[in-house]
Amino acid sequence: MLKVGIIGGTGYTGVELLRWLAHHPQVQIQAVTSRAEAGTPVANLFPNLRGHLDLVFTDPAQENLTACDIVFFATPNGTAMQSAPELLAAGVKVIDLAADFRIKAVDVWEHWYGMKHTCPELLEESVYGLPEINRAQIAKARLVANPGCYPTAVILGFLPLLEAHLIDDQYLIADAKSGVSGAGRKASVPMLMGEVGESFKAYNVSGHRHWPEICQILNGFSKPPVDLTFVPHLVPMIRGIEATLYANLERDISLAEIHTLFIQRYQSEPFVDILPPQSHPETRNVRGVNLCQIAVHHPQQGKRVVVLSVIDNLVKGAAGQAIQNMNIMSGLPETTGLTGVALLP
Ligand SMILES: NC(=O)C1=CN([C@@H]2O[C@H](COP(=O)(O)OP(=O)(O)OC[C@H]3O[C@@H](n4cnc5c(N)ncnc54)[C@H](OP(=O)(O)O)[C@@H]3O)[C@@H](O)[C@H]2O)C=CC1
Ligand SMILES: CC(=O)N[C@@H](CCC(=O)OP(=O)(O)O)C(=O)O
Image 1 (cartoon, helix red, strand yellow):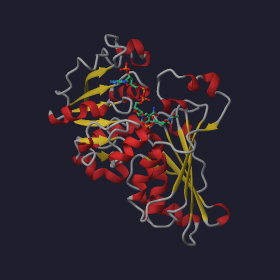
Image 2 (tube, rainbow, N blue to C red; image 1 turned 180 degrees about the vertical axis):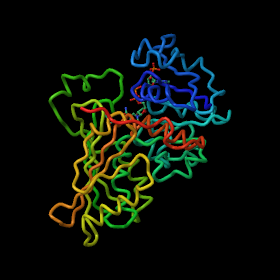
Image 3 (cartoon, rainbow, N blue to C red; image 1 turned 60 degrees about the vertical axis):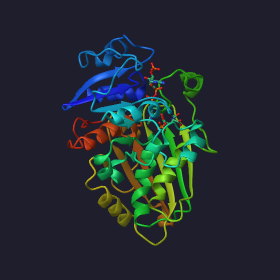
Image 4 (cartoon, rainbow, N blue to C red; image 1 turned 90 degrees about the horizontal axis):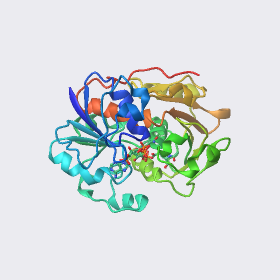
């Protein structure tokens, strides 16, 4: 059994980790922390876990996690970097759901995250935890940087086209929409029902911190670096991300051929599902499951390809992908404890 610790168990990604790990056949949760709720039984705060978990939140400052095999950080940016070096030195593997180890260039990270990195020496070693591109490195990693939610949806959508050099990498557009759980569980006025409900807006159009993350990964498949415009939006739903991706085709190609390219690229990926051409993926069809559904379009058979990509931000965009990474790092079948069907309606 894998001994697992979770730092930040009261947030949305933390409780999502608990929901999945409570029934993971190879996991024993050793500790789950919260500063504000230390001493509270987990099931008191989250009654959906009653009967599934018999744990009490503990104070991270009092918790010794060096006996764990793996520790998940489901904490704000800038938290995992404070304790990761000590855990790694004790032989504990670390999966950070935040962004501390996602960006390789420390100056870029410090610019976008507005703080000093406390262990830049770990940036080279950390592995970007997107199994669809980095499976072999994840299997050997001690430190995994779980991808951001928007980057997961956007990268998986553009990837087959860039790998096949089918599109102009100097003109990429990602128009993405997220539900409010993407902003976390902490109270904030802009996330109130009265502010978000019955409304729809773009935000951070001039620059969102996921832009350098997406570019860093896409640049691995492009020379020169990609020119990407990324525009996030907030929609009045709780879970889900829909990314509509636009690119210009470099040569004549039919929709059937583009579709075949996607099918072949992801044919052995358990958590990427390519829908029939011209489908319209819906966030509700991936709600609560570790899955990215993608469909391709070729409007008017013109020069533009449009890719639609949906995920649940808390599952394939966070906790589910983190458990997928844990399975790979531990030599377990990748789908262990991660199967399920989305709830409709
Ligand atoms: N929500 C989403 O869709 C996604 C989130 N992420 C990332 O995952 C991380 C967690 O997100 P989310 O669950 O939404 O966040 P929340 O704000 O909902 O939860 C944060 C958790 O971290 C704990 N925490 C806060 N500060 C500290 C600290 N200094 N030391 C230890 N624990 C701390 C909080 O509990 P307490 O204060 O009681 O200790 C709480 O349990 C973030 O970095 C986020 O960017 C990534 C992908 C998607
Ligand atoms: C709707 C909303 O606010 N979404 C968040 C992104 C999600 C997130 O938590 O960011 P990471 O994936 O980098 O951890 C935002 O735009 O800041």
